[in-house]
Length: 211
Ligand code: BEZ
Image 1 (cartoon, helix red, strand yellow):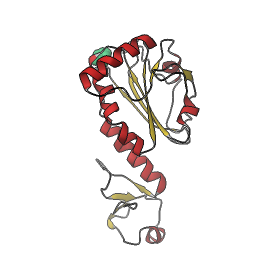
Image 2: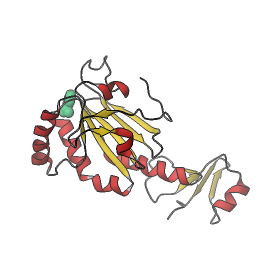
Image 3: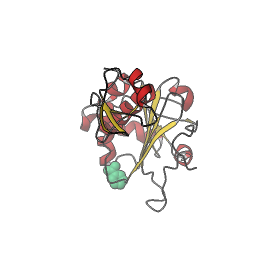
C-alpha cells in the first residue's frame, strides 16, 4: 500500500518488546513516530535505537510515542536489547515491533524489492494526534538517520498547526518564521501585532509566535 501525506496511518496489531501493540489505541491522543530497521544485530540499527532511547525525553516533551520495527522475531529482539544497552549505554525504552510476518511492513510499504526483497528500508513516519501521516522519509539501509531532524520537523508541524506560519530553511525552535502567504496584511496585523519584515509581499518574516 502506498501511503501519502494526509492519509490516516493504517491501524494494526503486532507483537513487540513491550507486548502486543494495537497501534491506534497505543497512540491514543499522542503523536507517533514509526520507524523501521532492516534487521536485528546490525551495526547502524544498533546505534539508531540507542540514540532514540537517549532522545526519549525529547519525544515525551512533544507528546510523541516512538515505535521501532524490525522484521525479526521477538526472541531476537529481546537478545538484541542487551547489545543495544551494552554498546550504546542506554536501554531500549520504547517498543520494537517484531514484524516477522511483515504485516506492518507491507501496510506501510517498508520493503522496497529493488533495494532488497526481504529486508525493510529505513522508513520514518510522523503521525499526528489525529492519526494522519504528516511526514514520510525513506533512507537507505547503509545510512543511519538523524533523529534531531525528526524532532525538528515535529516542532515545525506542531507550531504550524497552531499558528498561520511556515518554517524556513534550516529553521529550528526559536528561529524566526514566515507568515503564510494566504494571509492578507490586514489579517496578519491582527495575528502578528509586533509586525514583520516584508522582504517580498510573499516573504514576511516574523518572530516565532508562541515564545
Ligand atoms: C545496519 O543496520 O548496520 C545495516 C543493515 C543493513 C544493511 C547495512 C547496514
